[in-house]
Structures are given as C-alpha cells and as structure tokens.
Image 1 (cartoon, one colour):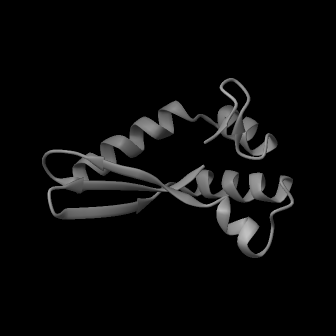
Image 2 (cartoon, helix red, strand yellow):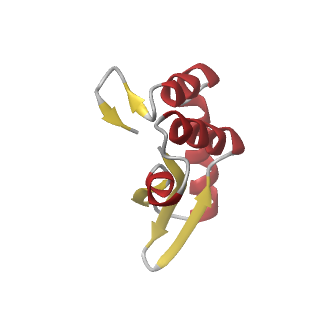
Amino acid sequence: MPSHLKIRNGRERLSVPLSARFQTAIHRAAYRAKAISGEGYMQAWNSSSWVSHEGDPHAAANQLLGELDAQYDSDKLDQLARNKGYDTKNGHRN
C-alpha cells in the first residue's frame, strides 16, 4: 500500500503523503502481517511510482489525492488492512 504519491513535471518533482486514514491502514496491515518492527514493517510502507503530469504538480497532487480518497473508501481500506495489504480480488499487494 503506498504511503506517498509522487508527481513529476519535467524536472520538478513532488512527493505528498496520503491522508492519515491510509497511514493507519498501512500500520494495521503491517501489524496483521506480524511485520511490526524493523525491515518487515518498513516494507509495508512504500511510495507510488512517479506519475508524470502536465501543469502545476501541487494541483495535480490535490486532484489525484481526491481520486484516491474516492477510490479507497473506508470499507476498502479496512479490507486491505485485514488482508495484510493484499487485494483479494486481484491477488496482489496494493
């Protein structure tokens, strides 16, 4: 599960943390996977791939953060946390 959204526009780059509810879900997923310390815990935290976007990266980040919030409602985040960060529909880790 990504903890940051990374945007770039040419040479300008921006990394923005996802909201607290995403951070909480990541922590819960790591706890359920018994990866609550050291390297195992840190593996649960990652960033998105760089997203190329035209225009102001801050405006793009706000738009994409809004889309992620809409896509990952509380029920979906709870399900991911219960499944140790895995999406049971497609079988891969988010």
